[in-house]
Length: 472
Ligand code: NAD
Image (cartoon, rainbow, N blue to C red; front, side, top):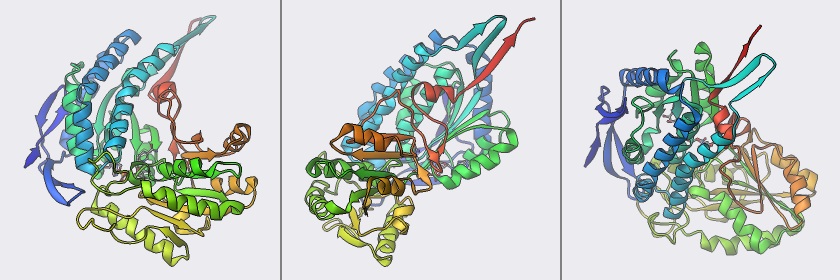
């Protein structure tokens, strides 16, 4: 069995000082497939010191030098695209088609950051004043497990474009994927100390990054609970902080929508990444007058959402990533039933024929109201709540009645009307008529979904400080 015993510090794979071992469990059959040696505070401090040394030089790099590094990172990661996808499928059960897209989108982030940097003025002057945008310093990048490679690439791309050096604390539940990615990025031949990666527990390695006075910035993707801790603990050293947190995203189906097209699009949004996606559209708001049509269309369209081996390209929903996730999803399905929602498709337990692993049934609840737990809390699994509304204003008000505001969708035929509805939604990103992407468009949340933005120039700005020089 494979055991990972190294971290990546100062341009080399170095043996872990921390000695704690953690099992990596394959979600399709609950077998232990690898072990990872977790870092301790000393490993983390060593990585921070390397990043600090490297910043003395890299912090003064030119745009051209940063662009060259971004291109090298892109080439290095691209060379291992298939290995990265395979690791994601095996380690956390991401379905192969979606895993491939996620990894590709992470790799694209390097070139997208290069383009954004090229178009960004970093200096402005007038009269005797010159304003420059300067790298913030050493950045601690902390990632969630559900798209670990994407988060690492995205945060690294923005930080490198801004002239920062980094210490990455990947999710410890993604150690195999991280190992493949770091082997790939090592080939980019970066200046020593620019990139450091320390895998360990959040409350050990993550907490040290947040506490350490030599880390200037934290960019975090994960839960609201940990985001709150980071904000609180980071205040002691006045950390600059970007938080990408959870969601309970609404999809508004307008009454002029073509249900045959709109429902598959709504279900794709709901079951994105087997429902383990911050952006998952887990509340579907439907005009009451069309409720029966919608129920039928959902029952028909659900046949395409097959559950099973994530390595099979015909499978749409894989297992939950861990036993903890499996139990969490089951408990929310039970709660939905207890609170009086009606199961249209799915329900408690494992899907038929899948006896091992962390598989759950993709579940659609109808007769949900927006006050029920399943409509308010982030489940992080394939569970959709369908909620009826009587007017467009009511749809907007239900959509916005959430502590979250990360993502939203509007489905309808009249594009002007869809845009009008989209413009009233309190979410960092709204898609019209289905999931789409633009690597220069900002990503991030209103309200409890986070603070700050990633991607394109917005992502780079999060790693910059502004300096003005005034002459007499
Ligand atoms: P999590 O908050 O449990 O862990 C995220 C990371 O924080 C991990 O690397 C973990 O080790 C680390 N961590 C834990 N305690 C810490 C501490 N005290 N100090 C510093 N770091 C600590 O989240 P998760 O279970 O890995 O991910 C799921 C959550 O992430 C969901 O809420 C999901 O919505 C959110 N998420 C958000 C986005 C986004 O872009 N907004 C994307 C993906 C996931």
